[in-house]
Amino acid sequence: MKTHIKNIKTIFLLGIILTSLLGFTQSGEENRQKADKGYAIGDVVTDFKLKNTSGSYVSMADNRSVKGYIIVFTCNHCPFSKAYESRIMALDKKFASQGYPVIAINPNDPSAYEEDSFENMQVVAKAKGYTFPYLQDESQFTSKAFGVSRTPSVYVVKKEGDKFILQYIGGIDDNTQDANAVTKRYVEDAVNNLLAGRPVVGNFTKTVGCAVKWKGV
Image (cartoon, rainbow, N blue to C red):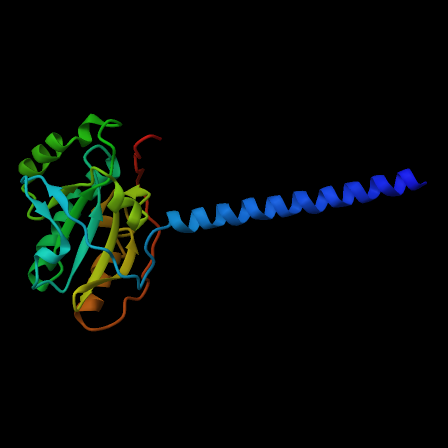
């Protein structure tokens, strides 16, 4: 009888230890997932300094007259990025003169896709006549800070003093394949609201696209 009770106590203690260990593991995983999410709406976005296809380096602080930026994480190889290319160019054409120019950033490891190499970025930017910077995030530090997971993904930031505050995260519009069938223009609506001095309604939308190719993965 005593042996039986002792065994029950042992099992009970092991259960407590196991539960504690599982709880610790889950908490650690939750913290890791939160860290991976990157910036949230209302966060101050840390400035970056990345290499442009022109050979110069670009940061948000370079242009002191802007009201904000439309930051688009995109690339050469992804069919979703290709489908949105003309629409990204149109966003810059429409809003750059109003204080919200586009900055495009390629977050991918070029060893995963040769098409995403810096040299090929230069070719595309020149051939398409990009009117905005097309930057390579070679270290992928900036992309991880933003929490980018797919291309294309858009982050609209508003300049307040010397800080840039995140106002919108998500897709460009509601139709990936057919620009003529778009019914909701998420980025345009977000920027128009900011220009009118209004808060962004619907400041987060789902991003559809190609998974970012991380180094060492």
